[in-house]
Length: 473
Image 1: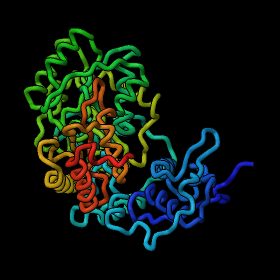
Image 2: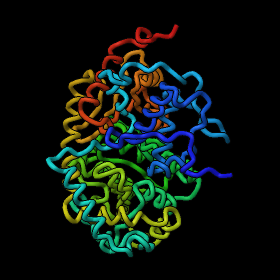
Image 3: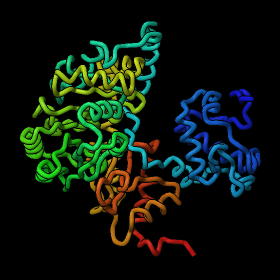
Image 4: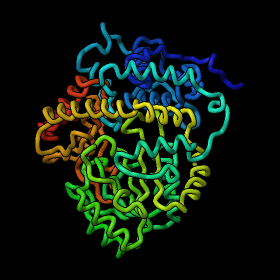
């Protein structure tokens, strides 16, 4: 007999104002285990049923259970479910659980996620709540109850062209609205490449692109980089050697190194692409955050560059909307068909909200707020972390940390996890040999105090040789 959401052995009471909901769920589970309200061997509710009961996304419950597993509270058993571990049940309650300054801060110190910080402009958050309410009140039932046009309506494409216009002039007819940058990349790779084809990319590249390439059975040719980013001569050599179908790159605020390609390198790259008839996929995830960056590659070679500009990093990860500027007009219909075949269509609700925010100036206000908060967090990182090891930009809400001395990335990550801090090792980005380095996200911590405390722990660990900081006996 199947279980319903009304018949669950454990349902947490969560405080939705205290930070990310998934962490609140994991915190509540830890409290209930310590108090003996949840005992050894208890099977937690199936994730979908708990999500339904709490009225949250399935992915929120997935992250909550993963966080609980990271803390050693639960274990997953294949085909059976998730169970409370024996070693953590009925732990004695401290007089005030999780009330020390260090533990309270570190529980929220997520330096793994490369998310934009909450914008802190004057009255901005109140304005957003008010505008979302107005948006809901004005919704057309056709938007709620009907399929919408694949690639976006004319109004949505016009909004996409307007979003791009400060960096790239493109007619709305060559703009497709996609379900996030990942959806745009999936459609592009499916149209431009066949299984077994070679695609060039930076030697350190976006993990989501690596996953897509593996899924589509593409071969990646890593290109050497320096402090300014991708080396054009490496691209030219790869064109001669591998005859690639495409080049994928992030020229502005590269993830993870924060490098921004100078204009002369951009011009060299598009010249090489023209010479060898290679299409370029330009991921401009962070372009809106860097107003002084050189022109996009698509502005230099509009006939051979497919430009992807997502809103996740510059406005809100919750929107999951990206605008794809198509290089060749004849490819618009093929790419629209690829979008239909893979992701169906971008969410009409979030597309409509994105269009509204672009047209009424809300998106620009959010970008300004994110820039302001990012600059403040960059300053904290510069003040807290030792000089000489970090590579950063005041426009980027992540930084690249080169590990000193005898530190290896695996050992450094493990030690930080022991203090409740998570960061991402270079392995996630490396197409070739990974360097001893980690990416540190500055945007996910809930506030500047939280970020400062977490970075102070990182700095303290960096100051010690690995052998001294180890407590293994």
